[in-house]
Image 1 (tube, rainbow, N blue to C red):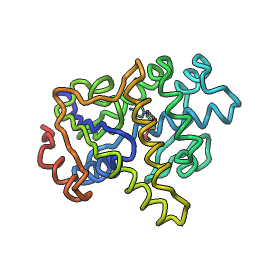
Image 2: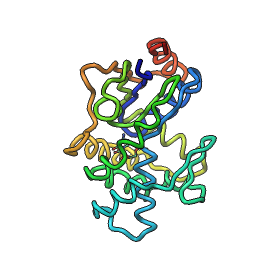
Image 3: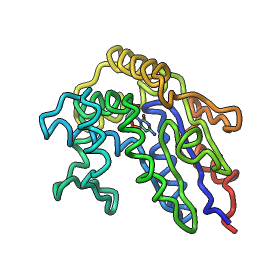
Image 4: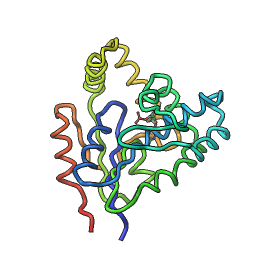
Length: 218
Ligand code: C5P
């Protein structure tokens, strides 16, 4: 019997990370934040002085990423990079390295290794389409660009960081377009994915929606 996977895909700043982590905790399942692997690849590439379109070199880095995850912290080569991988440089870099087919291929087995009993909640852009196509539950979690930009705006303000709604909205639309237009693993809603539009929902409601549909481990 295959270990069940709950695949949650969706655009940037949709809140799918928060929802996926809470669902994993509620079920007592493992959790994969696949975007962090692309962010770590970009950071390791930048540290090695690579151009972020050097496909073979970046694929080699991705295949041997010296990364570990502990208690919600992310480590690269012995340093805590939890905040650094969320920086603008790493966000933009991740989106560039994620467009390289050899990098995606190099990260495939690593992502599949997270599938372990009693179950896995995996979050990203291609969890349901490429990495875990046999997942018994696939959710496409989204919200309007305006709702996503205003949530990010609120987060930044709470951290005391400067934020401009217009430029946040422009950035999101640009990233959406790039994620949807790339030739490998473009972001799109699969016909077998349940649509979860969180525009008018809070986190609790979104978590309940997913938990109500969660496959039960057998
Ligand atoms: O989800 P997050 O914003 O952390 O993802 C960072 C980048 O990695 C995004 O630009 C996205 O295009 C890419 N990504 C991907 N496939 C995934 C997860 C993330 O291409 N499964």
